[in-house]
Image (cartoon, rainbow, N blue to C red; front, side):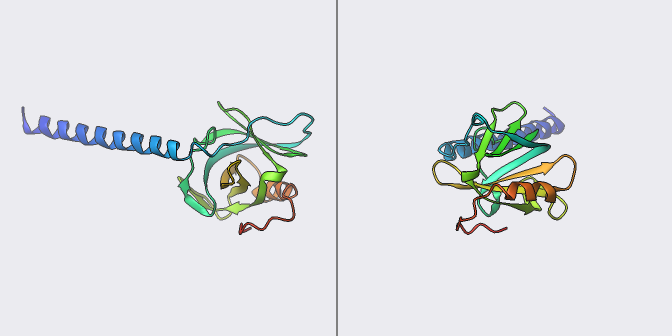
Length: 170
C-alpha cells in the first residue's frame, strides 16, 4: 500500500466516523423529544381564511433558536402551505400529515432573523410560539415564499388569545 492509499483510507474512515456520530446524535435527539407531539388533523368546519406558500425551517425550544426539537412530523425542513383558518393554523408540509395549531395553543406570533440552520434578513422569518400537549413551549419558524412576512404575522396574531403570561416575547 502506498502513502496515498493510506491517506485515502484514513480520510474515508474519518468521514464514516463523522457520519456515524451525526446519525447517533440525531437518533438520541429523536428519543429525547419523542414525548413532544405536534397536534395533527384539522377540525371539522374550520373555515380557511387564507393560504400561504411557506418553507418550514425548524422547531426549537422556546427562546432557544439554536436548540432544535425533533418533533414528528416537524423534525425536518420542508416546503408546504400554511392555511390560516378561523380556528387556528394548519401546516400542510410536503410528505407529512397536516399539523394543526389551534388558537388555544398559540402564545405569540412574531418575526425572527435566526434559527438553527438559517439566518435571513432582519425579520425574514415568522416565529409561531405554541404549546405542545405535554406543556412544552415550542417556537416554530417559517419563511414565506413570496410577500411581506408582516402581513402574515398581523393575520396570525389575531388568532392568539389575549390572556397568556408565558414570558414569550414579541
